[in-house]
Length: 373
Image (cartoon, rainbow, N blue to C red; front, top):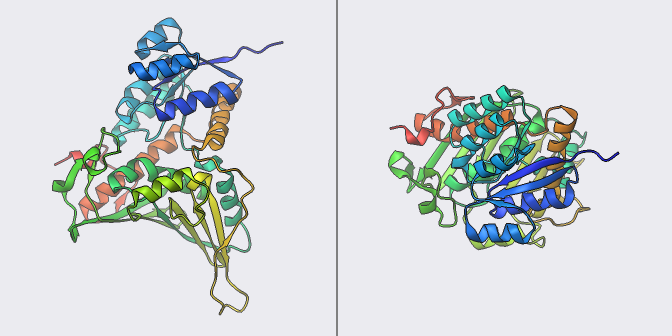
């Protein structure tokens, strides 16, 4: 007997929407895409060339047929309204990160999903990468010892862009690694040798021409944020050195295993492990020598996986988990609640910096910290 396939609509057919639609169409046989929504004529033409039915507005798709799944790959300002309307229509939801542009928005989205009783997963695919699984296994090994702290470095783009788009991958991954959430964050942002102020807030597009136009951030030369987790572990975040050409090359090439591109270093009492997100991951380990006098050296863990610059394999695994959660009536591995907590962790950086002290998580004030005078 042939089982009925789930139907899906795709909102947004830009770079990420194209990838997600291709993954579903090629690798997820349980799901059939019944429509792509994008008002841009060029993107519509690309979707039609792939054989998809095209709509200019989400309402037109829903009027024609309410899909079982709505894949939301639009820019973040649209996420809240689209998640709420999709949930109210009874659609299960897969939404691109960042989930929201303020804690308040994420509150609204979580409530809508819970009220509708639908499955909602967010595109944090890092935890499905082969390299991440190596990292996860090593953290529990005798050779690593007791976990002390994490140090994370972003892509090396202006912090307003990295805080919103890049760092959340590690914030979510850290919660998974420790099965714990942070209870406080303390952050400092420096520009021109002084503490950044609200006068330094600019649109991301002005800070980073290739960045999205939807949000604002603080102009900065240096940033440090420390998270204290429930289990007593500290995770620190640092601004990477800006080198746009190197960052782009590292992201599309598998030939730079020494890249500092989105680096996460885990410190234990007996060893260290380093994870680079370039092309789905390079992993290095250090062990404390038996004589304790010899300097530890990084040793690469052999890559048994193929380079995957656009993260198709991890995203496919994430999508399969999401569909499996729908079919078996369980929670997905990446929940909207966890993604909402990442929003608090993200904007907690700005809230702590402006307060000049650690702030508790989740944030008490639910508005965007930089939009409050």
